[in-house]
Length: 90
Image 1 (tube, rainbow, N blue to C red):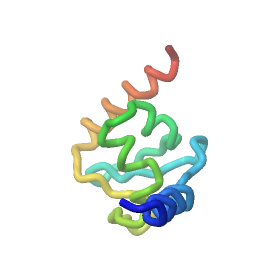
Image 2 (cartoon, helix red, strand yellow; image 1 turned 45 degrees about the vertical axis):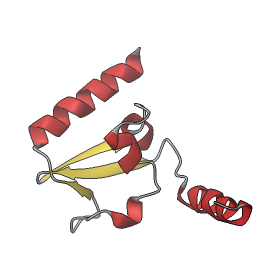
Image 3 (tube, one colour; image 1 turned 120 degrees about the vertical axis):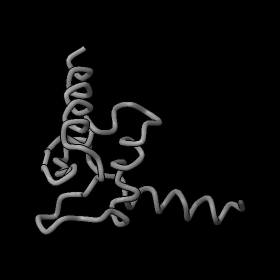
């Protein structure tokens, strides 16, 4: 990858850089959850961190209320979100 391509990639990342205190609505299997973007992104390298980094927001399926749709059981997502919130307390 050349210098110009790297610079274009850096600029693309900056465009999608979202504030960590932004609230994100997630529709997990039909149930809507709201969390801080920083909560969803705190485990570096995780699927949620990649998904909600801001870079891929335009590729999500969104429900009629604007929540990003994740095809997972609401109970599973609720447990993951509770764990991420508990990590923030440490």
